[in-house]
Structures are given as C-alpha cells and as structure tokens.
Length: 369
Ligand code: FES
Ligand SMILES: [Fe+2]
Image (spheres, rainbow, N blue to C red):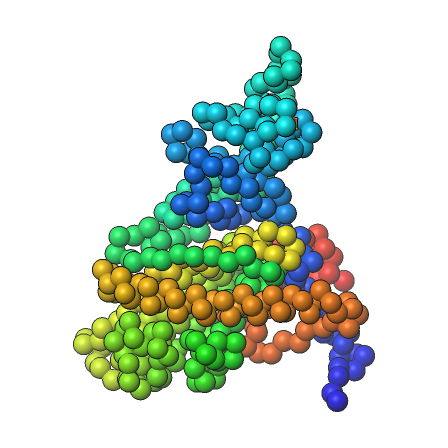
C-alpha cells in the first residue's frame, strides 16, 4: 500500500489549494450560455444560472429578456406568472414587470410604488445561442464574447444537444482540456489506445489554454472513420486542438486526412465542437454542445450518425464527472487529495486561472505567503 506520507500529502494539498475546485465561487463577470436560442420563446423558461434564479422569455418583437425569477413583492417565482405583451405579471398578486425588471403596476394600489423591481440581465443572441451576463451589468461588453463565428456559418453543418451535468463545472473544464482520458473513459467510443501516448504540446496564455495532439499515423474509430471516408485506413492523421477560451466556453478542433497522400492531394475533413458550460449550482452544470463539420454538408445521414455517436461519447463524460462529484461529496475533506502528472500541466494552469479569477485576494495572499 503506497499512500502519500504526511509531507507528501501536505505538498499535494498545498498545490491543490491554488487550483479551482467544486468549492470555488463562480466567476460572474463573463458571458455564459443561458439557453439554446430555440428554447427561448413566449413560454416562460425558468433556469438556475451561477446559483441564481433566472426567467427567460421573448418580447413580442422577439428580443430575449432575462429577469430574476423572484417577484419583488413576496419572492414568488415570476416564471409561474404570465406574459401580457412584453410585460410579465406575477402569478401570486399580479405585480407587473417590464422587460427591464421595473415594477410598473400593483393591482391593489392606485399608484405603483417607485423604484421597485427585480434584476434584469444583459443578453446577446448569436447564432444558436443566447448568452447572459450575470455579473456587473456595467462590464457587459459584447466584445468580450469569445470568438465563435463558425457556429452560425453557412459553410459548417451543425447539430446541437445538451446535458444537465451532475458535477461542478471545473471538473468538466478539466476533462475537456485533458486528452489523456480518451483512451480510457471513451475506450468504447472515440478513444484509441495510441491516443493517450501521443505527444502533446500546450499553450498557456492569460485566460487561454490550449492542448495540441497529433496522432499520426493512426486508425480512426468508426465515429470519425465512417463520415470522413477513412474506414480501413491505418495511415490516418488525427490532428487535435483543444482550447479553453473562457470560463464558459471550450472548443475542440479536429482535422482528419490520410497522411500517406502528398499534401496537395489530401482531403482534410474538419470538425469543431463547442462545449459550453454554465454552472447551475456548486455541484451541477448546464452543458450545452454545438457540433459542426465542414464536409458532407447536405448529408443528413452523416449528421444523424455523428450526432448519435458523439452524444454517446459525451454521455460517458457526463456519467464520469457525476461519479467523480460523488467521491468529493462523500469523502471526508481531510482524506481527499489529488496528484497531478506532467500531462495535467495545461489543466492545472487553467484551474489556477479560474481560482485567481474567482478569488483574486485569496490567490494573492497564497502566492505571497
Ligand atoms: S409575490 Fe408577486 S405579486 Fe405578490
Ligand atoms: Fe471526454
């Protein structure tokens, strides 16, 4: 039995203390995905985002509105009320709110009290996504939205889906920036044995973390081999770039081609996946996924095949992260530790960044201690 001795355990805990985990506060001043655009309609949509209750709906002109889902009067959920034109009427005593969250009518009073209302949140609808800013509204700059032009582009074919992840969002970000798990957690779907051993390089910037892994030559699993026409090819190239773009957005780019062919003759098939994480509570997360490809654009059978196969693989992450969350949930804090290996470098850097963003003062104190 090789358990860490006391000095090792202390060192592991010290290292872990600088990294975000399930107990780290949320980072509010960022754009997060509140919903798929298709899911926001004239029906009130309640959603918990970064621990806060929010209700979403569209105005009559189609603009997305996001308000705090609690009435200013007795805190009844506004999502149980009703829409009248662009206004939301509380289902308890009928207080009426406009799209900015201002209370504009109190049925039992001849005059509506001034200065009463609920929080409204800045939103941006772009392509298939509705983004929300849960932090200081004065800082909600649309320019801070991470680049995502391909999501709405006509030369990419998209499919989308999502999960309610029973895990904190930090674990899922780490999962996405860690490609060594593919050969194991995804052994039955898109992992191959050579994947975990392939050399990788990383890029660590200010709030940007990327991992590159070129698996060449390789034999692709069916999920990639079939749509790219590389079935039976043992000289395939699988060129992967996994990027943490913001606390809300992680993107995976993969290029496939036959490495035997001269560069001029290669047909490169590209796929991209946007993994969009919005914390719900400290131990659960909205996990929105948009997948795209730049080949076989009009082939619905390819869309259906890839969607089914990919979401089967993503379910493995969802189940895996829920299992991991349970260990943290049910193990005494003084028995919990994590140890990192070289391949964890980018994700450790990313978790330190999240910690510093969430708790800047605590991080500074720790660094100077
Ligand atoms: S709780 Fe909403 S009107 Fe009373
Ligand atoms: Fe995974």
